[in-house]
Length: 310
Image (cartoon, rainbow, N blue to C red; front, side, top):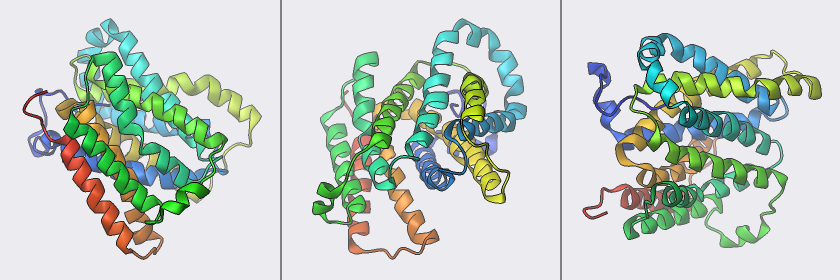
């Protein structure tokens, strides 16, 4: 799931991008924005455990040919660090994604995007608990500034909209998912020093494996997914972009700049989601879009800058 080791071999053609954390995290946010849209479209057509299990099984098969030689070489280290590797698989792969898709069956997009905006603060809490890492004042300011930008976009510049939002079962599920993924974000910093493709292959495969009992239960408890063109395209998208590509980019970005400095990029997800709705759904950009984008970008810049002391 990490893009690669901090210093080990990267193909010459990809060595530049592998060391550009902000670009990598923007790619991640773009892929995850698309995942939210596809997840909402799939709700009611593909059961949540089925979508999560097939997503990660496919992602594992996609990445395995590229990761195999690294996985074999790194297996002794993985075996010696099995606890953290399995915990990363459960939190970042199995639990978070299944809960996210389940939540999307019970809540509206606006709610999940609002809740997701709290992710950097949850990451900061886990960083403090597990690593003793505190947010700097600049990071806290950046998180709050980008959160304000997200709210401007989601509320269409009208704060009275906030009072009309009703939170429900899906919101509670998504809050749990958010806390779990924030934990995963911090755990990636404690992973063994092995090739990123080894981490990806193991966590994708282990994450899918953990879901098998739930998948078998869901096959008997809910209608089975139909093999329609839309469902297959949804599976293709979530296996390639928000899974394989996004997780490689996300983990490499966290590895390069740390969880606290990377966390504000969560705020880019609803921003890119809004851009996608403008491009693909035909929504017309308005003044609040540009104000919100400016606040988010300013906040991400402030929070992700390297601090001279801290």
